[in-house]
Image (cartoon, rainbow, N blue to C red; front, side, top):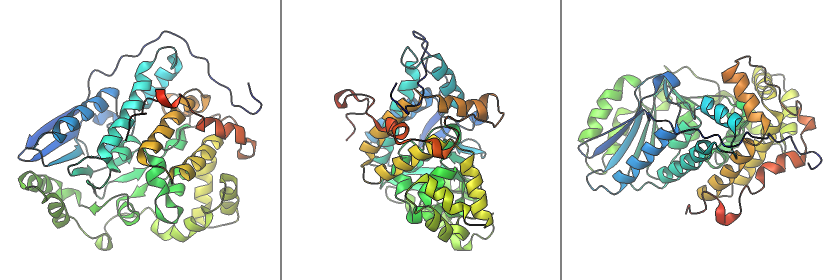
Amino acid sequence: MRPGTPPVRHFTPHIRFPPHMDSHIATSRTGTLAQVVLDRPQALNALSLGMVRDLYRALTAWRADPAVQAVAIRSSSPRAFCAGGDLRFFHEACRAGLHGGAEALEDFFTEEYRLDHLIHHYPKPWLVLMDGIVMGGGMGMAQGGASCVRVVTERARMAMPEVNIGLFPDVGGGRFLSRLPDHVGLYLALSGEALSAADAVRIGLADFLLPSARMPALLDALQQAGDGDVRACIAEAAVSVADADWIEEEGLSANRSAIAQHFAQDSVAAIADSLRRDDSPFARRTLAAMMQRSPLMLCVTFRQLKRARELSLADCLRMERSMIRHCFDHDEVLEGIRAAIIDKDRQPRWQPAHLDAVTETMVERFFEPAWPAHLHPLRDLA
């Protein structure tokens, strides 16, 4: 082992996890509108491999169907649009053995990233109707390209909190977070804090704010709309953020200048030092949140966003796919999921435990190629 290299978990060979058999996806078409309903409410619509595969299959079929002019995706529950991936599955598969046989874990991330790439380049309007929690994989499906129309209700809470469990903001998170103004993306990535619906619109992670009571009427209108009318239907139903004083704010807007100041630093340690010198409630709260995260993954995430800023989506997803492989070779993610989901003691034992013990070698290991270029599982993404 090279000096400064984090310990690598040794896996048990020849164990295979089957794909999830119940996909929890409902699809339909009314008029020119196709719909996807995420229906796994007991798990906050956490994505399984089966769900990813059914989504990809449906979107591919509708892309070629001239009768479908737009596709909408929503949840069957107001609690969550999608809370990300299935963390219990990740933990079980990782403990059993990634390289030795848990092919479903490898397949999940490869196919999820392919789905995000398909969504980003989808040729028809992709309408994302977000109510409740939107995290991780849910954000990946919501941050599409030019055809994506993102609608949030007053109950929406958007976040990329992967550092909480020893991971990094994947599903293209490096790309869409690094492009947010005033270092807000880096703040969201390192703190794991959630955005209110109004703030999501203000910073460009959502397009329209819709009172949840208007959602049924909007769906009816969308089903009757012709080609090109979907954005107009949404705009007519939506409300101005400036008039949304009925939404409980989370405080991002009030702290934009502080975020721009503290998160403009050139390292995680410098950000932490800047926050320590500020005695405001925001700075104290943000520093306390960061100090609960994995020091190693804070530094990895910082570098990820710096690199992703100059990458295409395809190259960003390829980088993140290699990073994910390295993460599941390392103990941090297992420990993070254990503390948050399995034992629920909220006391992760991070290695290393402090920022000043994180070395350049530890961080750079996550950016080494996990495969030769011609064997990368996402090598064909355009």
